[in-house]
Figure (cartoon, rainbow, N blue to C red):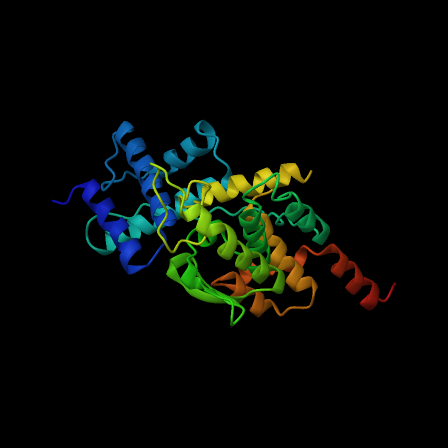
Length: 305
């Protein structure tokens, strides 16, 4: 009989190779399933022979003992639903305890968005080349985040082959290994070209005992290593502090990209495609963010104005 760890590994192989999910998503599934397996073992409830009360007890444990946010619990629920559907479908599990589980819903929070002036402050926080020898890289990173609405993982994985300056576009590999083409604005092209031609060769040539990035990786650390999504988050947060802004992260720039496009009159479906959303419902939240646009529409069309 197939053991629980073997089923888990088969599931992870399935979502990675057959569904094409990203390494980050696969890692999240692995962590969630390991967590549930440990809880099941401590509760004397085998993973592949779940008792009826096992799952409610686990969700209660996440909420009351672990004090996880609703969004984190939702992710655990999604992981378990995927796993048990896979296991039951292949006859590896006696029952699917998630079949009757209703997915809890939470209020959608409006995304945090920078104003155009705040974006300028963030770029200015990179300073001069005298005080920040990585200025060209830092400016190029912020410009790409804001100009293209990229996720941190998408920017971290970007290579030189993904840049097409002559066409004014970049190739982006998003969630599920889905590919999309995103236009580049003039400031972003100038910033990335300056970094690639002037600073990147210097970083690539740094001699160090640390792991070096692949030769075609676009953004490098000061020691020539690969810039991970965590390092990108840290960089954006550092620049925000220097610029006197509130705490932000790369996704704030993605939110700003979408909101500013829509407030400028862009079609919702086009913004959906640029962001790489599989469902337009995900994109629609940005239509509720631009207060200035809402007020102008209200003033123009409401009969009591």
